[in-house]
Image (cartoon, rainbow, N blue to C red; front, side):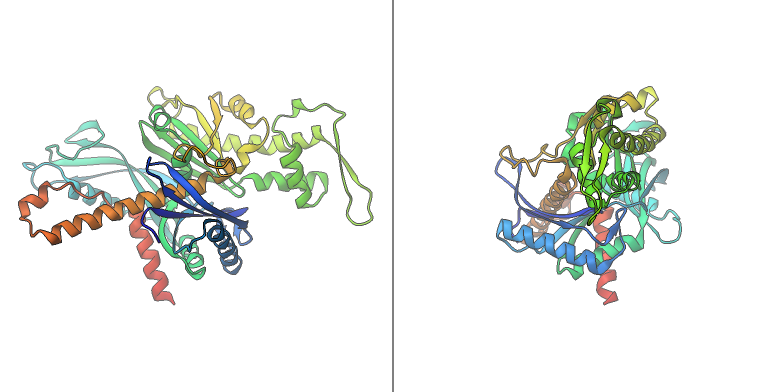
Length: 436
């Protein structure tokens, strides 16, 4: 595969999307090909049927390969699902020599210490995200590198998930004949695709309403502050319509997309949709008012759960206020009048997020649909990972070419720290290789 190409694989509850993208000369991302298939082996973001998931992945990948006319080797995969939880944790290290300045190694030591946290059985730390640092008791330090100090401490946002779920995803990707190049938390991927840097600075909550889960990511001062995965999404709305109107799922889904609204006041009492009955039965008549009442009840429940998480983060404190409000994305964000409902429940400014923040200007409208926010985010993540690799390889090559003295190596820019996820990806890979 070319260097500046990356493939995102979004394994969702409703659909699986493979997306191939590359950076153009202006630093924007062009999407070369996209493939999607119905996701049959995933429930609430967790794989529950390996064989079906493998088939769906292969189908999506093939479609993308045909569209872009190239072969896909490696992919960056997103993980979400009801097993993801996050916690806040503070930790510190005491430095042996406070005469030297704090460097990357100190921060690595501190981060590795957080990784030793004792988790529930079967859980694994996925991300450790430093919030702010303290050096010798001096608080609110964003970047401690280069400072003097004996005690370095930090608050961390720690994201935890189930090992088995992560390994199952790795297994599906590998069995579909692909290399697992990286794993990313889906709310983080969607956030990269949809949010602007200004919003992340001002404070914003990204709500990604998928089929099986609703993901939340909160940013403030440019740093991710809180993540959560709520185990409902658009599918439970469809389910409710199916039960409430006694119709089959396919019809319920179509009704939701075509006529559904999250705000019952909109529909007049006399607006009726007629649905063909099953083989030889009378057609059913459903009033749009009833339809939107059913949808409204469920959407309110989802939004309220998300709002509880936003309050947990501390939105009500002055210092933690989210000035940019809420951004809605994902397939579920296309529901009519959802924006108004969310504003009404939370009292926060809301917009619908389209993943065009980093895409080239002439991108297809299909691609910039909120449906593809996660996939676009995973492509961006894959591209970033490749750039890092290139810098590291370049760096190693330079060191090999010129036998430089120790002193000079120290002055060279330090390569970016490997995120824990890269290490996790390697561990999943090793596990899969040994398990064969």
